[in-house]
Image 1 (cartoon, helix red, strand yellow):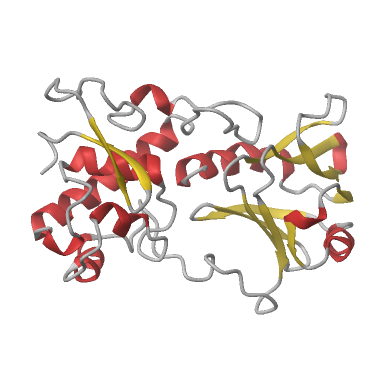
Image 2 (cartoon, rainbow, N blue to C red; image 1 turned 90 degrees about the horizontal axis):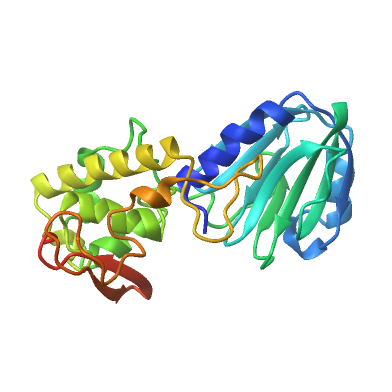
Length: 273
């Protein structure tokens, strides 16, 4: 599933192509992807509207329009929003077509069709998971002083704790493993067992890893593409994720794998305490 760096890369690459463009037509080929309102109303309310801003919150893309409505998109496992000129061939797995002014087409593609789209105005629909997002990495609200009291006394594994979107918005399985590796923290430790120094190291690691992911245009293993249909490069720089059994980049010993909260997890038994 695309995480904060991937969705931010989509936002950055999509914005120059669609900001200021008018939506002249909307074709919904798979109505169940539209969670609110109905697919018909979704298309009707967007047609004629101008995209004024392309934003992001956690793992959600947020497209603002001149009517005050917001198109909120959760890409989930294999969803993608891609902008291209109308003379280019339709991309594979296209499920929604947004025809824009000036010869631009924005496609929502999705191989496994788990993505979700919502068209909302203030207060007219509650999006579960979106409304309760915690602070984001790299923001002024994400600090050790914020994280310490939440972790204190928690028996949850620290990996499960930082994957909780109400605690940190935008962090997913790839970057959780990477953050804990960089901070030298065993993913199975109880969150409440971390010292103040370890919480500080974890916050710094989260910001470092997320910034690296953004700089490297996201991580692509299979399906992720940015707003221009390009793959990311961050997979070349990962410390542990997807490297089970391979040498730790710090100590050279084989990396271990485990399940933490049902999620596949890679870590170094010797470097992460």
